[in-house]
Amino acid sequence: MQRKIVTQIGSLPFDDVDQAVQYSLRHDIPFLPELPKRGDAMLEYAKEPGKLSCLRRFQECVAGLDVVKVQCIGPATLILSGYSEDEAISRAYQHIAAILDGLQVGNVILFLDEPALGQVGFDYRRLWSALFESFPVTSGVHVCGSMNWDDLFRSEIEIISFDASSYDITKYPAYRNGKRLAWGIQSGQDVRDFREGDLLTLPCGMGPKVYTPQDCDPSLQELQEIASNLCATGTP
Image (cartoon, rainbow, N blue to C red):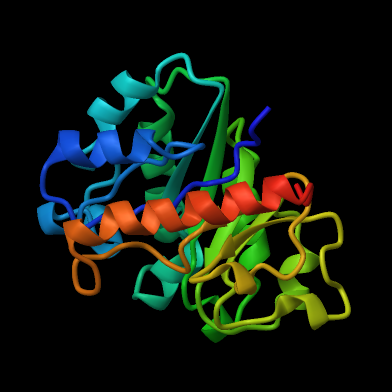
């Protein structure tokens, strides 16, 4: 049986909801699309938690599936952006609650988007605990910048999503520590140690400042081809 390996971070360059959701459904693990062109950028939806262009359509289309991936701006990122700790946790909680309300699937992978976590000078892990203890999800975090990866390996997060095209985290002393990895890749060579339960994504989201809708199909095809090669060699 084909393993469920391929997913994506969240943001897409589309402005059409149905087009974005249908694209998501072509992945092994469908993901909740965020459309910055329609106001879904992280710091924008944080102002109105739960307001995402694709949310209701996505919930309708994935009903009954065994696993999907959703994401929410992380509390550490909100604090870095000027929110107080209490408000950061509250806004993230409200957004996650809105996403999960009506999401009728077997399992939910929830990534907290914390792109610049390496710049945080406070204990972010206790902020995450306050959220993940409140929801029945598989916990994950997405970091696309550099940081002390041992801190994440020693956290209670189940899946670490990172830019494998820029960082080799396999060399850190606490590497893995029971964690699953979401390898953010540009080529198959970026996958250094793929194991059972790991995922494949792009290094970051497909925001419209970098990507166009025409980039989406080739990007998905590349991920699918790399996943097929990994399965053919028996790696997963």
